[in-house]
Length: 253
Image (tube, rainbow, N blue to C red; front, side):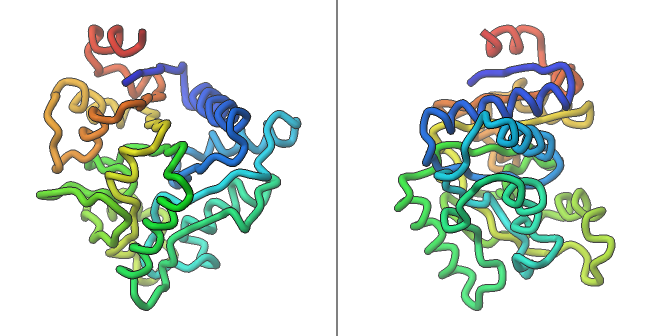
């Protein structure tokens, strides 16, 4: 485990983009598990800029979306597929034949999830996965519960998560979907390079809880990343301010 502390969100976004670009240079056809939400927007902006400057080539990149809202198809502005087109795909030279995402409109969601999980295996597993941390400690949509599931599955979203995402669905009559599709914990744990991005003072209590306790708690899914063999937390100074100093020093070496 490693902690990298950046000055602010802008600096964090540049650092994260540089890390992704370097891994792509090392393996142009790597498998990237794409994160949605507010945390990675700056990173995608920096990656697009690097592409425009000729510093990175996405033509052989393979991608899997980390999660999706059930009932939101690719043309739905609330979907993560739409998000990735808006912030990334439409601005770089990615080959759309290499893009995979959960079919949130499938008649048989369980069968679709099983196939999606197998597609990840057939691709050789995930080379890079990046996530933020939800307000309830979830990663992707692996929500707090009595247990965590290993592979891609349908999940009922925690009410805290739905509240956290409510602003993005103000124009949707049905509000925030109650169910989502998410990659599972085994898929995350097997990712060769795993990054957690956190910015802002509101994330500080989550990181404090994570680093003050060594418990692997299914009620706090991000805690399971303590077992990941190659995880790096890329956070800004505001998010880091409640992490004990001795912990920061130990994991920043």
